[in-house]
Image (cartoon, rainbow, N blue to C red):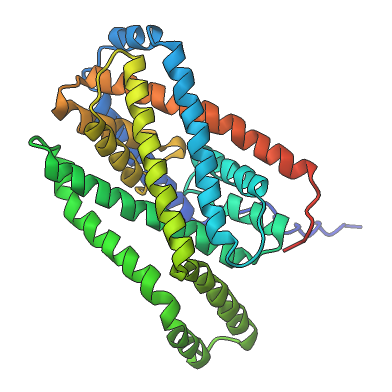
Length: 338
């Protein structure tokens, strides 16, 4: 008597989509190319000497400022979130910390989804609304960095060619972001009309309409003058503190970095992080540091030593805060399920 072979059960393991594979491949190739360019000709013994001789008091002060700016970013995000419902400062801070942790260690800026899910789970706010505020916040930061880089480049006699060349397209993107924030909520009727006339199933159409409505409500938070001015004020303070931290880290290594160069560097790092990258922006940050700092008298060795210390301390501070954020989220039972 023969026994029929068992029917193979369906493989339930999560499958990686082709788009994710392509995205990761592009990010790895880009990182490898930029690292080769950035690290070529580096005197690693000098890098080690600079890092070993770093002033711990300055590094500690820089870490404190990173923590402060992380808190201010959470408070700024909360300004947008509370347009729809109450959000406590601790919930916003720990979710923001976990999100930045995710951006440092996960590909494709997955941290934005992490922090949106955590806030939604803790407060009951709609996920689409929370995610829209997170992406709107990122768009506003990009616009601020475009303005910063443009103002700095206008006042500098010597300019890094690649960033000066990129200023115009970035300015166009920044203007597009402003127009999107200003106009998209006013075009809700057009989105509704398109969905109503589309041949998709009614159930899916209803879900898409709901997502669109909550997403536009997240963007519409900028349309309230009090929230807008509060957000803009905190944005200016955050980037000034980031520039101060950049100068302090340079001083810790015995390097003198003018404040204008510090603003240009953080603008380059912020705009460069929008490129496809591996976790932690490896390759991107090294390329930006070398490209921005070398034209202003820094050696490639100085630039690489600086950015390695900068990244390492970012990992430490955000890693600790992010890990605590995940721990607190796991220990606290959500009050409202989204």
